[in-house]
Length: 303
Image (cartoon, rainbow, N blue to C red):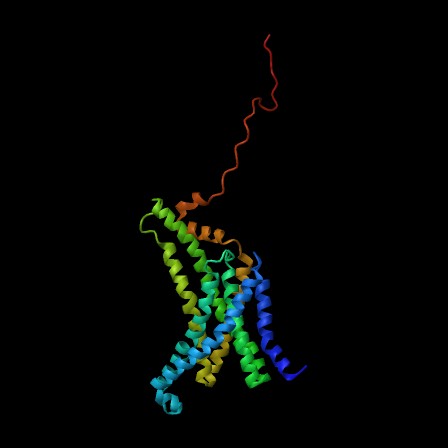
């Protein structure tokens, strides 16, 4: 086996392992392979677009922070941190997570296959795996085996962790969107008051969080590595461990409680509007057929 093949395997291995792990955790109803493949490919496609946009934004940022960019050691701490924050949050995290978010919405938001709590997580993860796999191939072929090994335990899982935070909020957005339809119908019918908009507010909150939260986490991840100090490196590894814990706990929890999205939406709806519980109650069993002769009785004759 030649060197290029070995490097390709090393680059792809972490994405394959994580993809298989997440796929196996989808217990309620397996997603169609073609949809997951499409999400994965979309992640590959946006990698080149992200690189182009990042290059343009970083160029303008370097122009604005010309003094810091040219001589970071001469900048004040505030100037240096402002420059790094702009680069990592605005030029990298926002671009990459935003570009992952777009195909996620386009391909799955109205999909009939999006029908359980875990689905939002697996969809977001497969977009990120495509992005991470392609990006990792570029890094490994450019910088070698050592870089591939380091990224296998940091960068590739990092993209998956960002995706889990995106999918977590995206799943709840989907659940609340279902509940909002019922809220609108019951409000319009007069069953709920005209100011009943709890589901709408929660839906908007989770929709916003599905892009804002991964951008913040991604930005922090890159920022801590860019500052390049012993203190920030220590904080980074604590942050990385915390992401591992959050990611695996979220995946395991969602996998265990996963069921049809209507059940989740109904549970949330009743918790907010208890008076609507009767509307979601299972139908009463049919009444038994009426007997013309009571059981265990006999005719008597009076003499």
